[in-house]
View 1 (tube, rainbow, N blue to C red):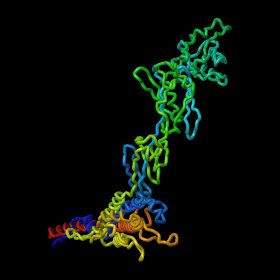
View 2: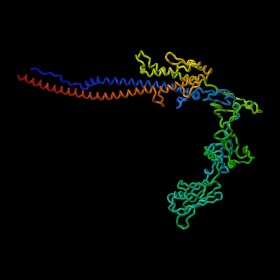
View 3: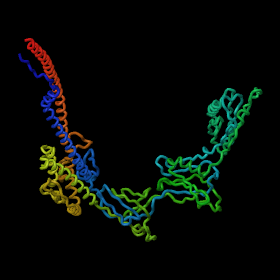
View 4: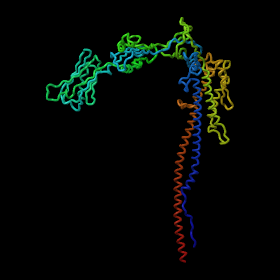
Length: 622
């Protein structure tokens, strides 16, 4: 009898399932490829949006002098003209050593004659020379600043006493409690008005207790300001009193406790440093502490022998000059015959007098607290640098007395031409990118990822139609196309620019060029009626609806296209996730099925082996 032979080797369950699932997953791979393609489209739209935003920025610079359009756009030609680059002006001075000129934001052009009578000056007042540590006789003074907004003519008091008060300190170092009874007397002589303060000291008191008692009792007693402190276990009292406000400190023992330690021995008495007059350095510091209110800065000069206090106004102009009170002068007063005596013999020499700048503009006198004259005429600023040369001092006529400087104000054609050139460059960048998307590449046998997208064609069509639209209605005069201004289309849709034609047009009829580019209202039209021409204005409005500025991320062509793509990507990602869940369930079922089959084959192999052994045994018994 023969034997049974069954193939019972192991099945590669995971390998078989993997191959089967690879076939099942093909729709997922197709969706992932589609997602990658759409993501590339989104990136391409973002690149296009960047180019459109750059174009919009350059158009806005022409219209508004800024990359951003105003919230409320000008609704008529005159308003648009005032904000546009067409108000850019050049201003030249025939003598820049006398004055320089700048102009902007104006429709004014012309030539003007200017004579500078005087420059604006900050007041400078200098004291006589003294030693750097020499004490000045007197303690207070006032500085009055004229013409300030907050305090017109109100005196500002400079207090020199606080930094040079009297100091007293106990001799002994004391730790812990005093251990004695007694009294500390503080006496202040306030110009003959004598005030006394008695501080009772008890055995259990510490120096801190004594300090607190002095602080508490000093309130309301009319004593000159003083402070109490503890340093190195010594009691220190510092008074802000001047020499006319002397104060003294004495210690009295408690007579009823003669056997106890004496308070005078414990404290050791007080050593006193008398108040002194202020020095020039302290006067400088005191003035500068209040310079924010006075508008006056103090500095110290060295003349080779002595030191001079120099007071200077922070600002130029007559309104920012200052005066000194008499007791302030008295600090530096010297006899008139003293060789150090200044010109006014009261201790100070007025080196520079505060004054306004004065000029004659076409014969009309004008003043300024600074050497800058703003809006002499609309948008014109003059910066004066030195006085005009006097050529005839016998006349008051500014045209005859002074050598006049000529100031010419004209249209800044360079700024206009340069801005148009930048706008055309950014327009061509947009056109070039769109052309790239539609150009077939033989090497890769493909075009750009947006080649089949109608949005690009729409954008290109909108931009080209605005540039090529006629700027006038029949019967109107002026410029009718951008070609007359040197702007022409090339075969690929880009723009070429002949700036000489634009310069010629600006020189021939500046108003017509600005009207053509900005747009104007027809004569007799009702308010709010559509304006004629306005290529730049229309281009700005169109770009505002095409590109995706950060300030307006919704409601425009590119954003809508990207939103559609991103929504499709999210939907497809959800589909993939759901499909993967179904695939996972199928994969689990296949693994279970093939594992069961493998197990059945293993059992069959064992059974066949046992059967063959039994047959072999029967054959051997025959």
